[in-house]
Image 1 (cartoon, rainbow, N blue to C red):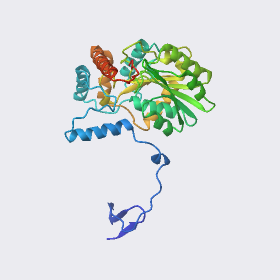
Image 2: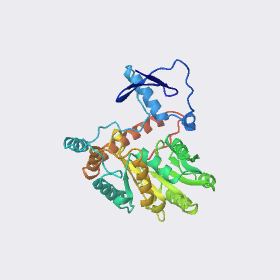
Image 3: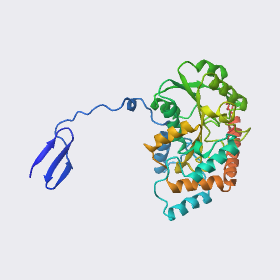
Image 4: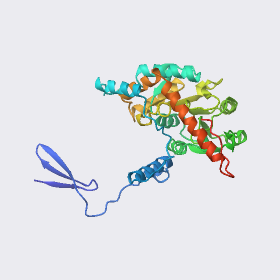
Length: 350
């Protein structure tokens, strides 16, 4: 019996013809490893996920904790959506699916985007993907250097995702008052430079609840056209508007061909754990995002997509019921905060 120590691999190879058996072992001497990728030292943890983790640990210890961390509806997923997914599982639909999404769901999303967002898209311009992954993929397709603007206060993952795509984050502060947050047009103009590649627009906004007006969006559209910028429109909260109306920037003149609109099921249908959403935009960009998915996530499970299909094509009253409940809670909290002397609250409209 012969043994060979393969230095640096931490492995013993034992030859027993006609096979080789590999066994891991511990080195007695120290092993010098190559350094890790540079981003591992600079990429921050997600603040919302860390707070959620800490709150969960305290809850497990019996503490009465009210977590205001992640944006997650406290309602169950509507039953007709759950039943559609269960039926799919029972039918044995547990295998690979097309990377862009199943055709019937892509068609249903295209119909929804045309009707609700006034964006004329075809199923081939729709990509079924978790919304967070959609933003990540869009940035990797659109950006490999230069600056990406986003409005601040902002969702915690914009900056890190821009960094991972090779870009440089450039937050632009919004104005605030008792009537809510609003766009600072001069700050946007000052932030745009020769190296600006794209701008991320989130409306309704997490965490401010700001719903950008059509006038504000037209200003941003003019900035994008004048400076040849791409736009990533994060509209995941589009169904939860309490005052005014949601407008998609891709519906404005000259914006469809330079905008990736991202939305999904998590907030509207209480499906945060299902990890399904969509991106809609120019076919070339969508095709490149799909190519990226082929080498990473591959595809979304069939039963998850069947749940998404049931959400879009089934009854919409659960969405409206949740929105009414959220609005009642907002109104109650604003009323209580207004009673605190010296407290000024920016009123969220979504």
